[in-house]
Image (cartoon, rainbow, N blue to C red):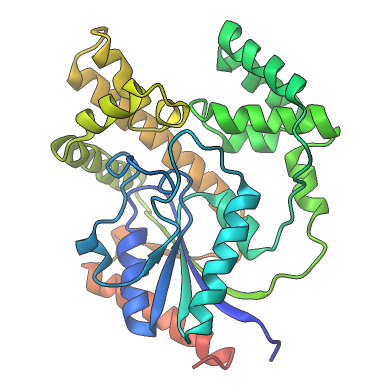
Length: 317
């Protein structure tokens, strides 16, 4: 057996139940959860990012959550470096790392050991792009990205101005796309033996109804107050976050709260569709269809069987 670290990944679109399943797998196999969510890394955005509560964690240690100030920039490379340290720490204590989240770029970069160029920032390029954003808006920039790097453009939401700008900045500075750089960077084999489990639904309407219900619960739990506080701090990350940006018309009096929440539901459904497009390209994923099981216990049993088979075949259990 190769001397690799076993890692279980629980991936899928928003509201599919990733956190709950990751916790149950951790309980069964002495695991700890490493979050792979690009918004849950930020402080003060618990509701919009669906941060797991202490009750939902059920005593299972969770890593890579709520550690970054909202005005700090954070790259994929930084995420991978930190997540690798978490995985090393978890395995040093004899526990099983479980990577759970919906940010496909984080997951693939981590488990496939993709190395990113982290050169000096060309401030002139960045300033020019930021000025274009201010004067033209994000759409022309996203269209430019589609021309040079359609793969990156397809996975990025128009609200994600930070990563759209970063992808264009990378291309203009280095002459290759982030996508090309990712392919070129796979120089070293992954140190991980990975089992990937994905959650989805046969009936897309079933998943969308879960998303709509989640937004309603977020609103009941204080989403409006959280968004108001973050947006008043004039923070770029908060303005980009799905769950905050959609409430801006309500705060400005241009829309009712119901209209703003309906817009949030629509944008979240679109985001889930993009997540599925990303994950569907990965043939390693063992898909579990959440609308196929009578209850959560049946879903957990199915995941347990997949994990047991993987761990036994690899000699880890």
